[in-house]
Length: 209
Image (cartoon, rainbow, N blue to C red):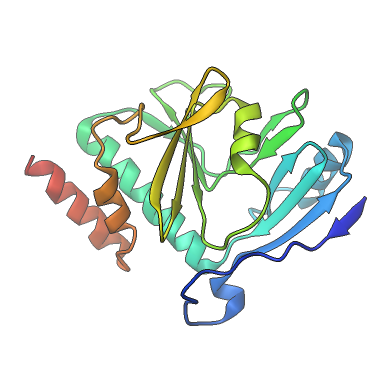
């Protein structure tokens, strides 16, 4: 197994602060067998970091920055508040380790959800925060994992929705799972430094509709 350090593309403009806290750290290994992948997962155990992504023999280990984690937590709180306000049952599974051996895919999303009240074999929705550019092709991974809907967020593009149709992802203007969700508003609130205030603003907006 040969390690290759992958240089992540840093945010533009660069945020202030300690680089270890503001930039995601990544290492990509090449020539990793499925057995190697499972062994490394076992060695890491229950530690939430680093997160693993596996794609046909390539393994990305990613340690998210504090800034990354804050955005993903805000995202989770907003989506869960939205579902709560509208009476939609969802089950959050955080960075659930998703694996598909025949397709040689594995991922640990920032957040993922099952829609409804029953636990399923895979999430209906995976969410990825793109804080520091770089790494493996996440859509290629999720395609093999058969996740029906994937959302990406970055500071330039906002929220991008990808729906799995006929075995491939197509970019969509809105979510199929939450068709009435105002993604532009969620995107704005993700910039809110106060998470609780962001949730309150969302709830207030929903209650005036």
